[in-house]
Image (cartoon, rainbow, N blue to C red; front, top):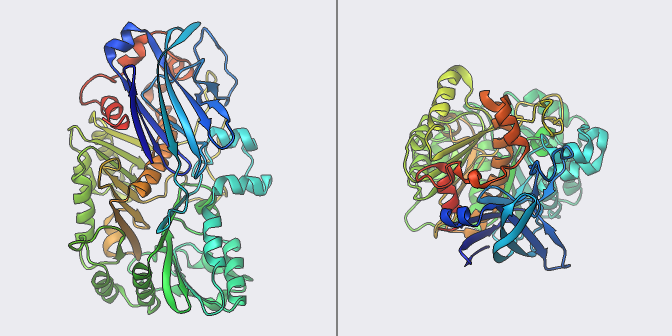
Length: 552
């Protein structure tokens, strides 16, 4: 849901996902300078119980609070936000909220309200009907986790830590499985299949008379999967996929009611401790008998365990790409494929963005997307990455990322955690749930093309927007068009993690520990010069973001 409004020279837009509300606003530069606006406060009122809070950050005016408590947030009313964009990460699904964006002017010790815009939104439910979208917390490397659980590992803390980190992700799969009764069936394919909670739910489904058949990667993950399955009670219901071209990299489960496929649970989530509770992952549930039937036929193809070429031929025939004429919502793309046409199509979709592009890249950026991002124009392009590259060409990949991020309209965030400096006010952070972790921060695979436009495009699934994910690995993707509610949920989650890791990565830049940078990280600017950070310089990322997120 979205709400835009203008009042007293202040324009604001609220974009409500399920757990995140993204807020953007704008005010004329001359007005800011004339009225000495030092930032903006955000007052939130929850309709269900009347609770009123001010959203906050961690930077303070040195004149007001010279030594803030490490890890504690401060009210934006006393220490206003010196930006034109902020987000509420504490919203709940299906709640109605008022957000008042308040321009605060004067001096740090004598602030007053200069203009206010009030926006009312209702957050999207997690279950949207045809679609349901789930994201884990995806940020064990966070000040909030450090504050809540003193950076102890979840197995030391107990269930509260697991619940907070899962954020409904594993619970969504448990509920999906629990629906299966006698006469129903569950057919799944997973890369890492190592979770005892899911084993127990599948075993219980079998006990109720449901058919349970699970494929798992029989190459790089075979030993770990089979070791974890010992004593699970479902070994007879599983089978290794041993003849894939590369990795049997899917993560999906098809639910069939009385023999008729009707729903699919898919996404990026490996069923491992770190996959569910550590690095960022998502799940997407789609209720569509036609889509579910196609996934089941794809599962049957994988179950036959044929080699690369016949599997690719059949998978390509099952799922044409680019989009068939007349198709709108929920197109599926299965891999391996006989060509890279689907990857070319994704790049073409990305390149066609009119205002904004948002993409996650777990293991580097394919050259097709480098070409898309390597374009200094007025399209704001965001990339959220686990790392800049991998494999033999990592140096070139890293150089490409470093080059494109120098464009004024390109903003890249690479996963990182807070590394303490004696002058900072931050808490130490951890970066994994268990010792074995192949991914630490970003594992999602999705793309948003013009999400605030009239026909947003969401591409999401298990594939890493890479060549191997297209012509070699077993993968699945969904292409969802013209569904603003779905786009709003994904946009909120993207900005939540993008902002989280952009700050942490910035601390690792060469200049981040000089005295000026240390002061900027700790305190707000005490005069209107805070707007001189390219907010009103045409073509710069902050200029483009100011306009885009305020709905202009």
